[in-house]
Image (tube, rainbow, N blue to C red; front, side, top):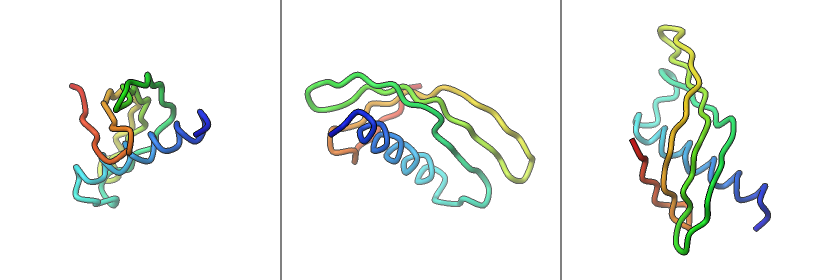
Length: 81
């Protein structure tokens, strides 16, 4: 997998996790992955995401950093707090 494709898959996995945490209600909060940095381990990726979050009802808009460990099949995402 090319580095660009890997970044795309890691971004998609994190977006899916973020929306699942909010019960897929995209009418209240919207996320956009601006960038992803990662380090590959044997069975996972240690990732750092730059995320743009917008809360529709209040107009709150921010950019922050989120860290997560993503399995190599992109199905298991564990956020680090």
